[in-house]
Image 1: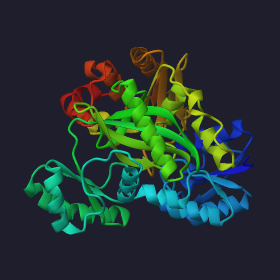
Image 2: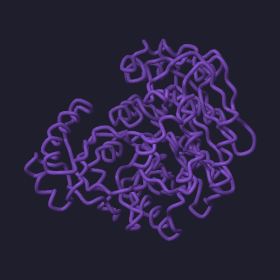
Image 3: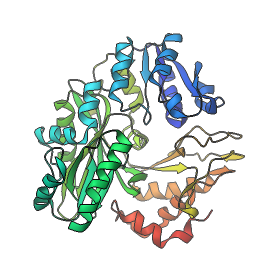
Image 4: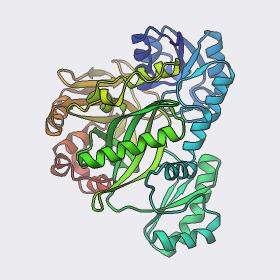
Length: 454
């Protein structure tokens, strides 16, 4: 077992990792920028180290500063959380080369699955269905035009090194394609330092469904699926488990494909295999694999009773998988909503500020993951995520009702937050019926702007 862990992150995920490590008897070291000196993760860790100024590139994105902090505090391991350097293959390698354990997959696995084209090829070789499109990177616009004969319109042009919904353009016609392709190349190069592109057919009214896996490099298990179809600008805002759209037979097929891929790439740690599900054709297609713990992991924990972060730490410490697939069953339904410091009435403009009144919801089936406390000054330098409200119920309907109750209890004073969005969504008939897809929320926001004022 690991003995001393450097948590190379901030915010609610740093708090989450520290708590899991302490449950396992692992000492923890927090890192913080000058803007986070009073942050909750700093208060909860056994030790803390200032790693630089507020700018992320000089603190949380500085491999040199992180490794120095680990060496100075005699850590034996590093957990990257999500975001920042979590899916950076060079960081994984640097941690290993420093004689430390990286809590996550190898640099080689991150490179393979982090490049959307190589991941697509690996999935196809493992027998996992992929969206019709280019077999690999597109070699210039002439090659791209030839691929259009298979995909037709609309077509999605995607950055090979992209992530988080960035680096994507959709063309609905030949004229749009001719304009979008060079723009996508330039955008990909600027955003990721890699102008490589690939293409996929757009699946109309698709659902976003993903499978949580745990693997030890040899064996792999799944913890069933989550649905993340409610998205704004390709960013998830509401996640739930399990999906209400899948039959038992299709769920079994979907989860089996995720296991096949994890084994094929000798994956180690917690990972998520993401798919588009075509409701009309009743078919699923691989889109990518996230080689880290995900923001929405608590809904899987709620329905399975498995502490995914603790399992990551055990695997990183050299243990083989403790769980067998037959040990894992789904109990009830869980929903997570992402509470961000944004004003939904003003096109979700960022709204950093000081928390002057905090009331956290509780009771049966309610979990609140955050880094908040009364008097906390939310810094303007980082992602706007403040907290995650997770609810669990015997049925999906019961979970939504519990979400409404918990949102009614929640108070985050001094800030504008996305709470009004979830109050409105939880009451919407289409959401309650589960009749949504990845583009549904964008249309809903256009029609329901007035409902989002605090």
